[in-house]
Amino acid sequence: MSDTRSDHDDEGSTVTCEFAGEIAWISMNRPKYGNAQNSRMTYQLDAAFMKAVADDDVKVIVLRGEGKHFSAGHDIGTPGQDLNCTQDRVTSWYDHTNKSGGEFLYVREAEAYLGMCRRWRDIPKPTIAAVQGACIAGGLMLAWICDLIVATDDAYFSDPVVRMGVPGVEYFAHPYELNPRIAKEFLFTGNKMGAERAYQMGMVNQISSRDTLIDDVTELANRIAAMPRLGLALTKQAINNVEDLQGKRQGMEAAFAWHHFAHAHNDLLSGDKLNGFDAKSMAAANKLEGN
Ligand code: ZN
Image (cartoon, rainbow, N blue to C red; front, side, top):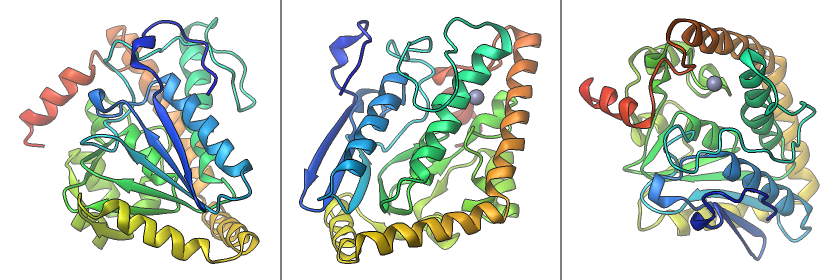
């Protein structure tokens, strides 16, 4: 996959892609950092998704993570976080890297977070997230863009970014993934939601285990792959369209604007868009609160 970044190349590829029969297995490959999503991973994920879409043999796409965790979220604290990384953009937004102030962050997140997630959510082939361990904040966005979610019994989900003064992650699907009252609890407390409750809430389709996750996802993917390609694509479009008619897309637009007001407010008060938090201090604060 193309990548022009030269720093931190010691990490190698952040995404691997393996096509097996009718299933494309796309794996996040930064296990050392809990698969924290940096810019490079974002663009490599996009390239892998598009490759799977273009391959006529692929009927179902699986997104998974190497190592202990599915995803620790957006990279806000590793040496390779690549905040200013110049990449080939794939949505219609212009380059953010030579801009300043709110424009820098708004354009960056409109492209790399909201724009990418919408693009992936509308991939015209069924997608399955195979989730184990942590699925936190930006990690939720990656699981939520998939059509189905299979989670191990030790998987957990959380969006603790309200602690930064920000109203949830950029792809604001919370009130669609959970009913609104549960979504409020999820965000107000930042608490972890275990796989079992996520299953009860309808966010997770199936609970598996570490030992059986790949087999269970393979079985599910094969069952789906037996359906005709166009039937699957049209069904996905029909359901995504209903969600949008119910306001999902418009709701996300408003939440994204408030999200950026919060980043700007943080920056005005503290000089930092995340109100001084990084991955380490967030983890410490969450631990202190018993999460
Ligand atoms: Zn943001």
